[in-house]
Image (cartoon, rainbow, N blue to C red; front, side, top):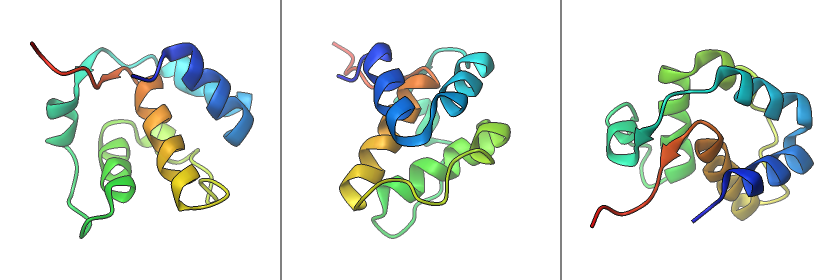
Length: 96
């Protein structure tokens, strides 16, 4: 589970604190991952791309700030996108 504090640190280092501050200012309401996924478009197995389509639909002002270079490699890019969802209050926890 990614913590909010970890998301701030990782994205602050990767995409800059101005980006993080914009996400915090936007302060999205809590959303279950399955609700978030209902706003995403499948991208042929590209989960990062699929998550970004949900960000684009729900948080267009944040999507516009996402850098063109998402990470040093594909793995970094995906991890950064997951941290972004945490900053946007998407809840990844499994229901019990």
